[in-house]
Picture 1: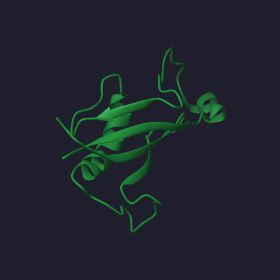
Picture 2 (picture 1 turned 120 degrees about the vertical axis):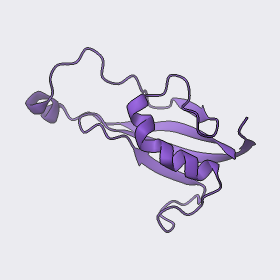
Picture 3 (picture 1 turned 135 degrees about the vertical axis):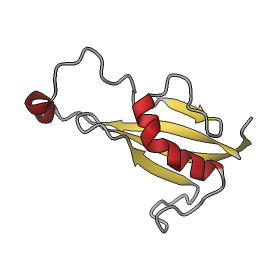
Length: 104
């Protein structure tokens, strides 16, 4: 099993949807563009959003176990995936990349 790098590449924010549907929140998302996390196999990286992990973890697991060409080759790098979390108000897009380094 390999380690997987998870990079925050984009964080969107839909103010109109938030104003219309969301209850006010003090702190909704701590992810920042450019942040990098390393998943050691199946383990969620420290400080990685639990809700986002629920969304990306199946893809992390697949890549960690050697899966390639997810969704019939939609990624230029066949050992990667672009996955967004399921937050409809402020979705975060993550680049997942299988590394050559074995998970501990």
